[in-house]
Length: 361
Image: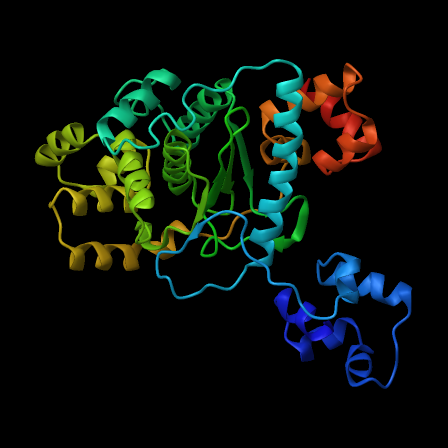
């Protein structure tokens, strides 16, 4: 159990032994750890304390379908796994809270469960969010366009979480290659998770890909490596919906014919240059060899080291979602949620909790 727990947390035994010098003696049976030492060990390997007393390691699987583009790595990424479980807990509370307070189901969730018509799905998303065909063009930056899109999404009851770590633990980073995002579909409280370590313009594509999952009623996680979908019909559909909503084919072809420049079109549509290259590939303007040559050349520029600084409360607002935090605030003030439970649901405690909600609500 000890060696499994260490490996599960992503450590090699020799490097973990630096953190816990006596661990080799425990494994070899030369010493027995105390309860206090085991509690400390379980925290270091992100494992519930009780798991250490099981006779053998449990079989762990993602609770939702998780699609990988290359289909080569089926191992559980513990940071992604724990984040999915955390958001499922929040979703369970919010769903029950909304039911108890007689909120109606959201009409668009699963609306196109058996419909593969891309244009119909795109048009319905635009209509629901009140977006014009080229809605992003007037904004000066990707971030402004993304902020506008998220505001529209949250206004329609979709919880949108941006985070690059597990809850608030900056030591547990979620690698972009492991997970660009995931979505937990629910008729009252759908949750979307976007990896905040990803490039801003790439996040835009992930957000819309997740919207398509909500409209088709399919929970899923994905890595979208090389901006290509996994070999799954729903993934391919959601990918096509995202491409059409962000870069409408007619507008793309009209502009490409006038100025076939990826950088220009990226600025116009407020998406990553890789998304434009993908659109050029989809519409036959470039071939696969040209696309992958561009992708491999550009990928280093897309993923620059991110700043670790910033406003804690602004960061927390994105990690919780404005809509989710608003429901927590209302539930606490109305007595429907105890403070201790609110602390667990938000990952905030005492004065930090009070300061966050005083600042934002």
